[in-house]
Length: 572
Image (cartoon, rainbow, N blue to C red; front, side, top):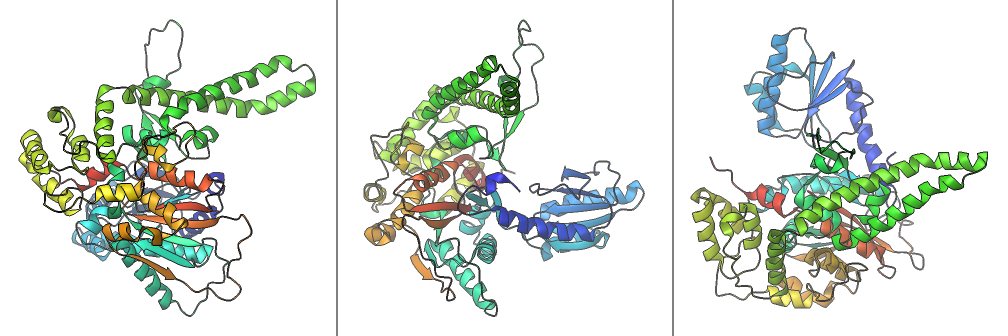
């Protein structure tokens, strides 16, 4: 069991064990030792000899009978698999090949393998329904990198189908969700798919007592502004600067090298420092959602507490006292190591956040979001910034778009006209028209900008961006209390329909809430969510009078950079 998946109101270990069971059943079909290659997340290694990332040419050497390809159904991956299989056939003793598509089997991919002459080499060709992956006690993700592009640019609903299937799996494990709320066209489609899937299984009644009270489906294109802004929480900044992939981050090794006297900095490590980031680590759980300006004081306090705990060894006189101190030593050493790591990370982040470039970018962002000087051009430094940084600023609500588009094409090359087209089609770049700009109305009605933000002891979700309250999270907050009827005018301005569906429960499963008991709302972001939005929802969950605890699900954990990158067309 993973302890960090069961700390909240919803025990996500139940989901984890269900998907592990399905994987075990497949592995049991493949007799003998196994090696697995693919692009997915480690579930268990009990049945496996070795694991490798899928790469071209020959497979790494391994003394095994079975080779399992564990992959997303993407055509380019089939080409690599064919290359691997053909090289093995030439190598010598035959091995048994198997392929497991995640989350769905693909006829197109199987046809590609057939065209390449290797389809017959696979003994088992099956699918593994890993739609939602538990990342933390309140966080699930499909990790579907192309979901936003597929939905909003290509009109491909595959990821919406997988989202609906994932939600049906959750309902099978945690009970029927009585109320579904949604905003956006994709949200409406997912709700319709869920209703249709439920109708198809009318023969079987779900007799599990509901864990979730509500489901809120939110389209990413309802709030295109939030991911563009620079996240200012500790976890958000780690992701902005270094990128968090599957709960891991790779960091420059210099800050983590043990300091030895008189070595003059020789023999510094060259391999990146890889750290896992989740709430299983006590200190990280405490600081991850804080505004970065509040992290230093917490680390300082922790350092004093740990130092005092180690000093206690001088007071241990009796055998019993010494034994008690020794028993606490592993935990204390782990705490000291954790503190050292996060102090180093904080130093790395501070080097960036105190730079002139970071300050200038943040100033421009916050002026746009607060409604000040929205015609301002990003200084005269466009050519000095990376293209993605410039695009993140240009996608903010400005009225000088044509100027920027021309500047971008002149500076970075006319091949990027396809990228600009994609951003425009997705709704990120708003072309100049004589129409009304709705952002000031939305900002004022939903209180998206707060001038006086307490970053140390926050009282509002706007602390995650030091002034800007994420529109998506504000919508969730207002749905909980006083309800969306109070903001009907704004909901009509925002893209897509808003709706409510009720799912009837069998007699005896209706929930009777105890006095003071919070509702549990599952909020599903279709198109991706940022760590700052997650932090804001956790903040709402922890409010004493909040009335709602949130579990977050998404198609992808992302930031503004990875989002823009996914929409960029690669020049030929």
